Amino acid sequence: MKMSSFVGCMGLAWALIANLAHGAEPSMVDVLRSCPKTANAIVQADLVALRKLTLGTPLHEDLPGNVLRVRIASELDLKALQPDWEIGYAAVEKMATPEALAQREGGYVDSLQGRSIVWTPNEMYLVPLSDNIVSIVRPADRKFAGQWLKKDRSNVISSYLQQAAVKLNDRNAVSIAVDLEDVLSVGIISDRIKLAKSLQGKNLEAIAKSIASMQGFTISVAGDSLQATVLIDFMSVPSELSAVAKAFFGEVLSARGIQLDQYEQWNVASINEGKTLQFTGPIAAEALDDLLGMFTLHRASSGVAKADKPIEAATSTPNGTSPSVIADNTREYFKKVVSIIHRVRDYSANNTGERAQWNSNMANRIDGIPTLDVDPQMVMYGAEVAKSLRSNSMSMQLVNIAQGAAAVASDAGTAGYSTATAGGTMAGMGYGYGNYGGYGGGFVDPNSPMKYYQLGQAQGNTSFKELIARLEQSIADMRRTMTEKYKIQF
Image 1 (cartoon, helix red, strand yellow):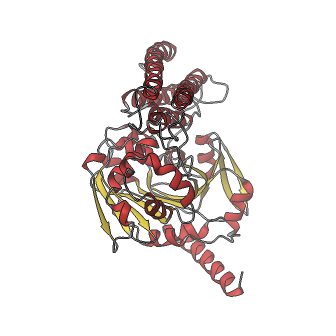
Image 2 (cartoon, rainbow, N blue to C red):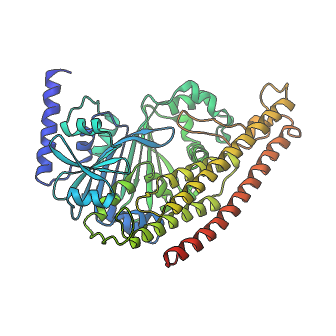
Image 3 (cartoon, rainbow, N blue to C red):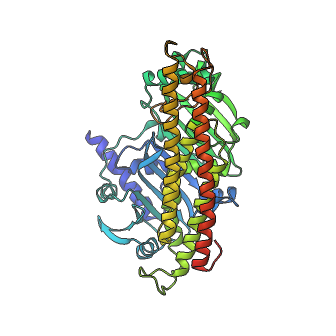
């Protein structure tokens, strides 16, 4: 690094520290500059506005009441849509002491670089920085946290994220930006988009080049209504893609297991001299919950929100936690698991490939529910539900693969353009960051291979209905067990 660059970075670091010392909130640009590594995603949320927008929904119950705003930068695994690491800040109404934070979270106070930091069982550090600002560092990697505290960084800030951070509108309830530059391969995309129904008869080579030239995307939700705007930015005008953009990205959403029930009401336009596709439309609280689930927004803030509240005196539990606290936490955990089961039950999938992806997504959501001070029997129940969802997902995928192979074998000699492959019975058709499958089609003679496709769908749907019946019964059984155990209605 040149000396002038080094001096500039140090100047920015000291400016950030000075701002924090005076209680000023760091901007998203400050957050990006503070990261020890290069981030590829950012999220900013006004939790006051978000709580108003989601009143009466499960998301509202997950949002901490004491937290005002959250700004997080992360390195997002674009295939799993989960962060490898996160660094950010939460502005709160009232900041607790490190000791109170540790006690509430079930963690402990550590000392690093001369500063008190709080380790939590959720594998993150909470670092009080001023009277109303706490930093969130995840995972709880002491070396990583030390680099951040020392401002010992050599990261290159994403130009796309820096521009997005500058443009952030503080009036939005949520803003998310993801850098996709140099992520997508033309060769891989060219092969994967051949089965997209919306692209049949189109110039696939030109569309593949446009998709590969994506710089990134931003998602924002208005502060006064559940209205979303998605901007997808390209290096050059995606002429061929623009005409079919709504249908194509609708297929991508479905294949990724992202539920956006109101997508048909969305509008698509080209802006920025045609280099940006703008999607606008209503978004349900459930879909917004899924978006925020890419980050640890809920988990990172919950302990901060509760830490300034009194902790009940323990009466009998070995770990010193009040039975009433365990009962309340267990009931809340149960409500979240039941809500996820119902989302699985009510999800409208086009085929078993999409349903398998959705079940896997929901299993991950259960894994992310905090388990501190939750009845061990209830935690085991949640783990078994997640295991059942994953097992059903894998079962449907294996059936599809087996029936697809049988269809291809019976359809030999059609140069690969069989109903089996066009019908979407094969799995793993991703863009490099997710599965992409499940297309209906009708090429060549459908009589023989289509039977295999239909058989696979029937078997998958049957196993899914059996799963839902078992899960509904398990809800009733667990509700009776916990109600009897804690003498409160679950």
